[in-house]
Image 1 (cartoon, helix red, strand yellow):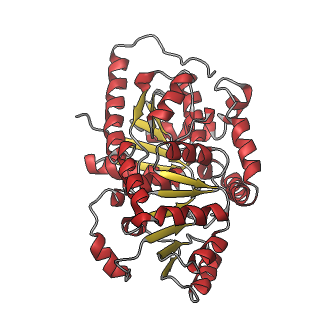
Image 2 (cartoon, one colour; image 1 turned 135 degrees about the vertical axis):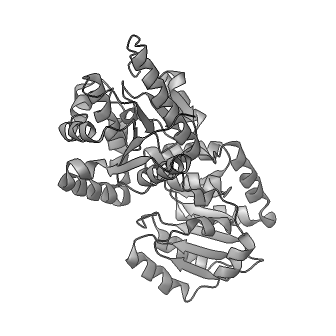
Length: 395
């Protein structure tokens, strides 16, 4: 198998999904080739730290307080064609900085887990300033034109659904691999569920509901949902993860003191894989990373108020695959939980079985191996050059 010598991954710190995908691929690459020289760069922070801080702040506020506005932005940008003037201007963001960096670093392959650097790399390749194989990991079960660029050599996607969407938009089938969305190895290893239950002090005969507010604790109405679940007559034990939102953690802990049901409250934790392993249902947003981790753990999902855009597309895919149910109101959340816990959880067991029809547990490893093949193929093309291939325009 060919080996890479130097690798560059371009990511971004908008949520956790893009960065975690980058880290998962990095770990798989290093396992395959411990001598590999590796760099992961937060692209927008590298080229314009102030703009990155402002944009990230606006992103977090919009998805939390004005999701419909974010949805309009997402929908509007999805109509931008790869060759449009707007897209070409976006592709100039950090153009010279990246060109200088690549000239100095000289990676064998460039992998993007965020759409903006993928576009900049494509433009550099188009203008002949670099001749480095470029690949992209799409980190949601959604299709958006910002991921699609003429000179991207290969796409790694989470499902056949996304592959089909790329092909409709002119991407050649042979340049797409359905690998799944890469996640950390911790979610793939066998779990000692009994041991984890003992460590956490969980009851053996209670169904366990995991409520996750996202890395920044932005799940809508999470306080009110927890308050209702804490006081519910439906017997269950609850694990609540508040992420980096310290104020939320303190509020939930205060509420838990008067709860009828057993409650465990966490802030930001690296042990989400253990919490998922002992849970029967997760109540969460529909972010690409979290749903991929839940699929890997065969964990049924209750998706609450997905953000318009990629999260609504993720949710639609998961509901259609019968591994998740969707709630748009607090009443629907409580109603779904009540129905799912009836009949000794038989519906939850069917949803757990269904995860095996769509989950991909070797995504990071498969991407790592394919990246080496892409680099090898590129070297062969340099030795025997052929006519350039251009993608069709997006429909």
